[in-house]
Image (tube, rainbow, N blue to C red; front, top):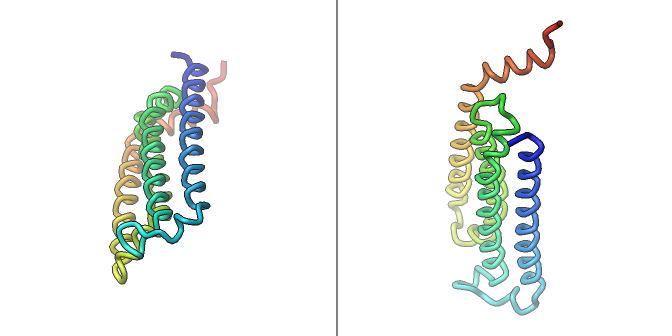
Length: 160
């Protein structure tokens, strides 16, 4: 598959993911606007229905985003053929962004229940983020020679 087709495939997957994310966030926004959903408790007076629905929407958004990283990995690998395992590096980067989004998205649903143990929530996300960051770093380190050769060839093309 040529690079133009790979770029087109990547663009289609990105637009598909954006449509899904827009739909999910529009649903969450709509539920937040419902006056009867703000005060209606779900499971506990600490957790209104709107916060619960937004947590579910955020979970679905994270799943859609991670799925985009998985589906787009082969296209990224084909476009960046000079980087070994570029698709895996991209997948880890997408997971890191998804974790950063998740950290803020789930706070309203989790913090009322954890009380003084917010540090557990922070530690959980720190551990997962560091795990995927180290994986991406190790993959880049393993590919550093090929990346260096490519950059040198771009900066200093052979003279004919």
